[in-house]
Length: 237
Ligand SMILES: N[C@@H](CCC(=O)N[C@@H](CS)C(=O)NCC(=O)O)C(=O)O
Ligand SMILES: *[C@@H]1O[C@H](CO)[C@@H](O)[C@H](O)[C@H]1NC(C)=O
Image (cartoon, rainbow, N blue to C red; front, side):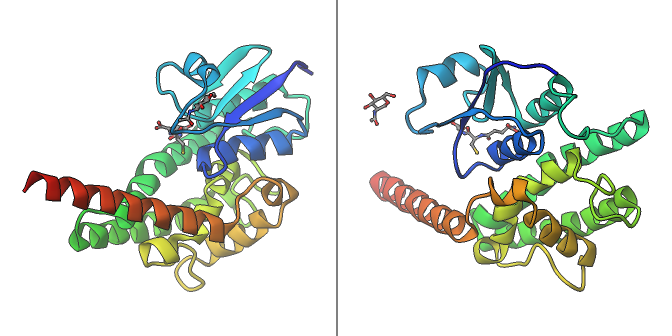
């Protein structure tokens, strides 16, 4: 088992940071958590992730690792002796898990953001339409990956569960923020049951932010952005 000091640079609202915290919890690893002010980033963050300047960054024995997808795989490899592996052993199953993780990062996030902050009502509507397609596609992915078991990875939580699970508080806020339910008993019963099961895990309860706080934060930020845009438009005239 690899040892060493672990420090995580994060932000409480970040779904990407949540992924890493969930993985660290599942592997029973203790770490120093540093909350970053994203409006005023620390020198450590700027030096550790000079390319993107984003959280999460995991620093293991002074060596930084960035990008949630990369970090979670790193944790799985560097601490292989802790708990059960997150990624499956079979190369094709590993590839499938990574494929769906990329789908979540590309398609799900793009549709969600468009539904949340499209510039016009039409743009938002198109976002919610895309979101519904994404959710049904993910329902199919869960059906295929889980093969009737409780998680994407089967009997226990794995890589893809962590990848989607990190987003859980925000996904529960979808109705309040985007106007459509993400988890729907009729359309996506498997995902709905998965979300309940995942949310009940210690690793989720200990790491995921409160849904109400996330929704409040997002609404406030959206209102501030709208006010700034209106001000900029008024200044032009
Ligand atoms: N693809 C990255 C996304 C990370 C990301 O977008 N982090 C946001 C916080 S939610 C951030 O640090 N933003 C600061 C900025 O863009 O200046 C990952 O998976 O880790
Ligand atoms: C930015 O952070 C530094 C130290 O991390 C602090 O001294 C400074 O007051 C902060 N500035 C603002 C505007 O919050």
